[in-house]
Image 1: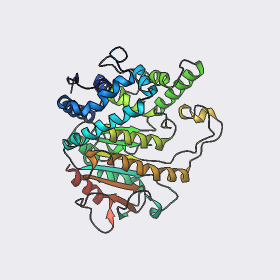
Image 2: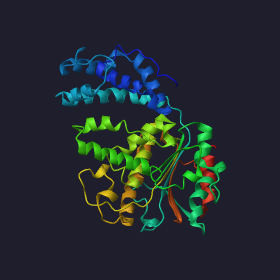
Image 3: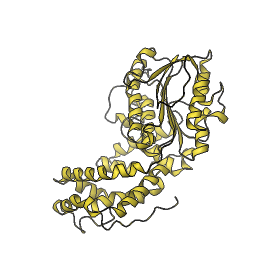
Image 4: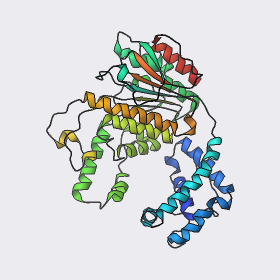
Length: 396
């Protein structure tokens, strides 16, 4: 959609309508799935009965909401502060929850289901065997795999069906061709998936190294010069630090996605696996891809804490040698696997129609969580057979 739609929200309480108006104002930074959601939400709100908003409408005057303190169609940091500091904020949150509990099922019912696929790849050299993998996931089906003699073929065989990065058979590329932009994503620490896809939306922690270093340098400079007074002001300043990499500057939507992901403040700048986990769950939440391949790696040991740990280049901040953390990576990944699976399950688009494959590079076993009608052959499987089953499932 080239331009945001117009809706009549005069009957909607101002604090509720403000959030929606703000999303429309940033229309160009929304993925198609998000735009579709807000179109459904706007259409629902236009015809919603006044009774739906009765509780919130009665609460706003008690909170001090007036045309002067909160002009209709406005949602700024001042309004955010107004809500957060208001003594009736807990009541306001409850009223918002009541409204969305009413709206949610109706919006979900309008979503047409389609087969989806989420593949989560673990790295080679983890210090455990298959019996210790995916322990936090619910009981799925474990299947035996034939491991190729050349481990370099492991990922290509799974993703493309061939022992070389054959783009013609790539699951992400086939899905992107069939279902449109942003319908297929690859997110990884290194670059193996980059060679196995071309049309998909692709993110690599290693490939973003130059941008990550520039961000860390800019944040360090801002902090040292005292240019900002608090986290909100820092957030506004960081919004100006967009990628310069040509792959993302050509797509403003992805440029903003990458910037926001790296500056989330949860370690995505410093820890490769944290980046993969956070980028994956944000892609699931926002873009709702039909095919997501997330590939984790081995992270480095976190060095002694510094005041700006989450925004500081640790190689420059300390002379302590960088060391790979094999055991720590395994412990983290057991949690990250669960996060990715749980995040997808939050959204109606993924319920009852999604195949989840959990695979560790080089291991002779995988974990499958899938609907009953996912046809995976029995016995010991070749990776090409897994690929074909996934391709059949997606219908590509």
